[in-house]
Length: 414
Image 1 (cartoon, rainbow, N blue to C red):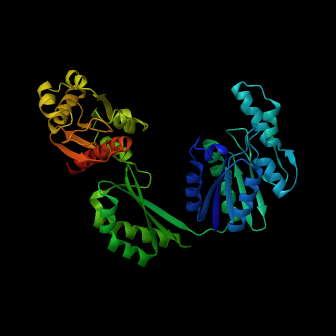
Image 2 (image 1 turned 90 degrees about the vertical axis):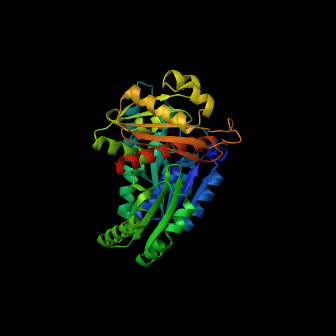
Image 3 (image 1 turned 180 degrees about the vertical axis):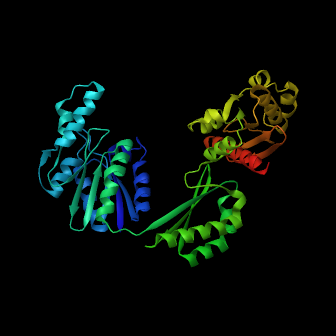
């Protein structure tokens, strides 16, 4: 079954808002078994909306659109779809009731403008919105469906998950798709591709599709098996994972939603161990990655963001002579930062990072991207030099994720 995604709104075209809806919807549709053939962003113009809907419904069995359902004058999707599919705007009592409850809960006066949002075309199947004021709509034209949802991401996601997804499963005959994502770190994409040449031949023979998904947190390998036999799909993927471990096992840290911070936190929790951080160039980003997880207080005692040499000296106890002789971005200073953070927090493990994130601060001997990363336990430590790129944000992210991966390796090998 073919599907398309349509995002509506002038704000998308002028770069005022980043479209995250289409990515999320495409992923959900793919997991359900649809082949997403097109993603299109258009303006709020009624002519543009009508033309795009007609075009996409002629090409796909399903079109999912977001946006243009709000209460303001530039939200024209509902009226346009009513003209396109016929019928008239009528109040939908369940949606009106939800809107009234929402305003009552927030202690707000319900205006006529908000009440009008409960009016939807009589030709549609309503989709309830439990978190906002704009109901969704499902239309059918011959053998194709259009699902129209609000553009607010958290509203759209809940409506899709709670109502649209069950509707699609009931009204479409979809293939069985089994997918697993293998999370890797520490090997560039080109090197990984070369290592997996023979493995890809194995996958082709098994009928498994492979996709490379690179990012700051590493490269995700998505393996997909299609077919009506779920048990067979699972067996094929299990065999593929075993073959993959033989080839790149040392770079695999987790599967599916297991991020590096999650895997490391779980490993520390298993060992009943704690972690402390001494950050310079990452500026607290490492701490953010750890503390964004619920329960992080069980394994994370705290950290020092020692951005200046003064803080390195006064809080972490780094010898001024080391800073003078070797510079802040050096093996010697990072080792001293490890000593200092162990002394302050008395944890089982520690990480220290110092580098040149850029775009300024580089020297002939230390270009932008130069980063020293140290990971340590009370009995063992590894301090290594890395050279990343020229982009500040990417350097910060790569430094942080590299530090997490190196500590994970240290813990696994001890």
